Image (tube, rainbow, N blue to C red; front, side, top):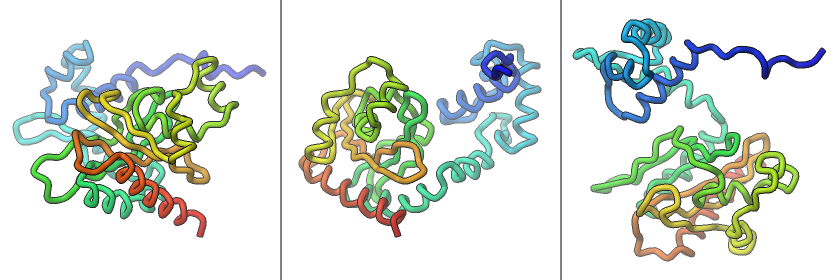
Length: 237
């Protein structure tokens, strides 16, 4: 019997609930029910019913003034995504962030996008770049995406991107191990990334994002390569 999953109707209520979580994550601050209803294009009563369900599961919470924010349960759920990888990478991400005074992060491939799995900001910095987990951009853009491209064999690449060519920078990774891009994902920001090959995990990149640095691209890239080797070694023991 032919599979019919692709033909099954989608749940509009579930989709709206996910949209609420996405809106709150993007806003980065509590929003009123009226603001959420407007963002979803629905009546306040519809938004309220969805919020009550999300509250029951601790996925959202309301502050004393009635503003809606993301709930603590989401942090627990996010830690379960590639838990072993996150645990192994955390010490190295922290060391890289503090050594380079840059925000360090892991990005994984999801569909055709590079998605931030986890990030660490450097300590004792007056200003840092915040790169929230869940942020995403096309694999075809930015240093993390290029690093992820380098991990895909020809069959995997064609299955996802068909006849679209890879970035020429992929060849640079095979030569020197890292790649740097400027202003491709966030205007004015540079990023340096290295591929991270972990058995059983989606193609992953270890990267930093920064405005400017006294360090050379090679110094940054070499520090990331050391961290990547240590993380990969943790899985081969």
